[in-house]
Length: 279
Image (tube, rainbow, N blue to C red):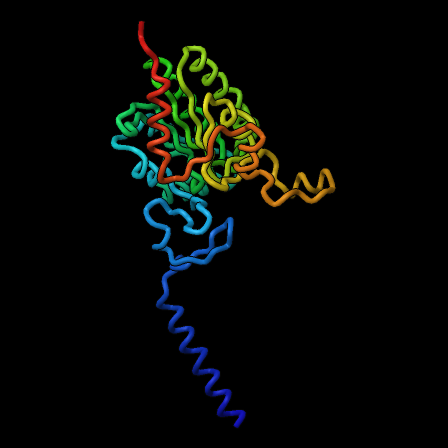
């Protein structure tokens, strides 16, 4: 009898393994915010949780397809060519292959619901959207181009912080981009930022919080230091929604939370309201 049961158990295991081999990876997903299990195709084109509205992470070019009617890329050739940190060159190449980007931000001139804007989209799939020297260079050039051509800037932020492989050079991008933002604002032009999940570290500490209008996607994680670092410093348990965009809205750091399917219309409306009238 034991032998018979063992044979049945082995047979069940083999059948289960056979079924698992036929099920593609990523077919079923769990929402990172509410934990709801769902079939991948239930997310729809915008990749939004049907239960809580959390927006799953998108690559920059996916966002372009959802957001714009036209897009002309700027500075596609700006890349880090001679990294010295051990293994950094290989990691960069893997990120480039995965995202079809030269750096962790995609920049260009776009049309959103008939409104022409200078658009930047940081990509969390490119080394977690880390802020490297060439990331800062591309964003700086975007603001400079927008200032010269009297265009509003729309920037989608997504970052794990400064890129440690580049050391001080990555940290200096915070000041570099901030200077370009200041010149753009001094010219009386609109800067609108959309905080996506996650926006952390040096990006939060600089240009992500310098916009004239700050929007956020539902339940996006936004902060500087990580929650575990803060808890170990203050020796207290943080609230569940600490560093979520809803908490930032309550405390005045964010102007509005906009569901992903409504972002294009919202951005276009705000840009139209803030159009610069030439004398």
